[in-house]
Length: 383
Image (cartoon, rainbow, N blue to C red; front, side, top):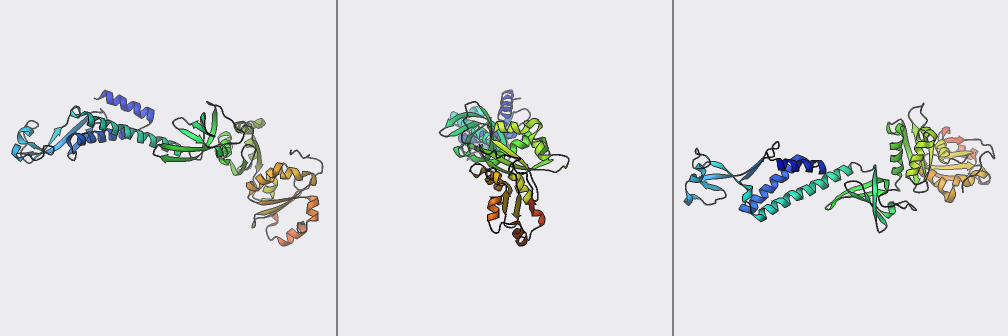
């Protein structure tokens, strides 16, 4: 039993997650390479390795010839006299197995064999790491901030470093070395220098994955995230739907005293998150998406993917949001181009009246959602 080799293989298997079969293959190839370098050819060389004991045998298959005069290639042939030393039963024309002692290899052959093994280990290690992180592509992982490389940030993911490029960083976020952060794996590429991993802090899927990990109902499929719109570092709108009538989708995402959503907000460094109910009725969905603004009427055209929205005069700025953010996110969330007008503007705009809309629009009446409001109940809180 080759205990030293067995211990070395155990360490490589545990630390680098490389299978024994791959390591045995590398050893076999290295021995074949050493034979080729030592003898000039290795066509007749065989390597046998016992996977249980780690003992290995290297031998050359040689044809038996009568005498030295008949010997044309001592690598492929052996005289009958020498063959008798291996087995007394051999005769001319037989093939015998001649053991090759690895200790007889020269320094160069041994170094080349060593390089073959090391190269195979490096290739397999890269392959293992690539496969491991390729499975995590489009998922969230926790990394440790290493250093700034220009305006990019190197993130240690454990067995490999990832790069958080400037375009994938949230404006205003500053990280310190050794700080632990969650990042979304955008892409994993296999290169000659190992896997190259690109991560993001701005991707909308980051918020989605954080909700999936934080909210049990989303993880088990009871609550589904139907749509998400994000302006990284500022605000995110997320539309959720419950497949169980007894489960409140929004409540499940918010959690007891806001514990679940607050954990996500903390991870996103204070980014605001609006959670609204998904509705198959586009009018109702748009009304939900424009929350917290109150809506008087929504006229949605599913064919054109456009919607006209009427809000109270005092709610117009809230519906539009600071620099148009609320309306912009609502449009991304619903997939509709939304035109928002106050009641005063709607009255002065021909063609925006409800009666005209009903005459021209051939869709279902359910696509029209109206809501009465009480003026002064909700103040415009948008900055």
